[in-house]
Length: 142
Image (tube, rainbow, N blue to C red; front, side, top):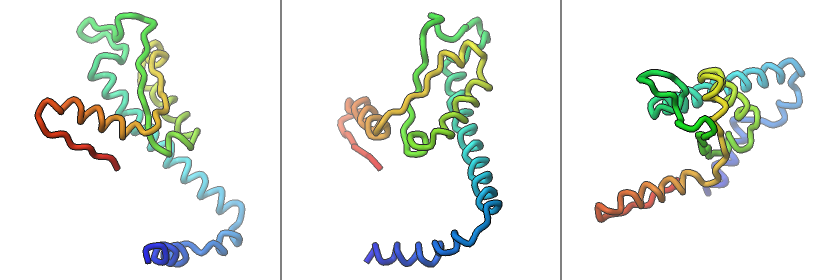
């Protein structure tokens, strides 16, 4: 039943035969719009990461006498999870470039973005384990 509804929606919303009748310039416009949206999304995600790095003092700033990591060779590893980051390499490039643009040169070199498969499940497990001292543990994954 559900499969039939999904198939009907796909047929009604997106007639595949119409794709063949598009011109190259029309497809280029769609590509460019998608690329602009991907870059914007990557920059917004990078801004959130940089905000967290600033909050924890790993942004390379000199406010309050802090120089970020004590050891100049130390790295800040950020684990990323999700199909967009995993499969769309241009999104990764945009995100890394935005982080480098927002941070100082030395701080940007110490930030490493790594793909973490099933990071949400692992994060949920860690959160549940850290709150297990309160008696009730909930395991949530979606």
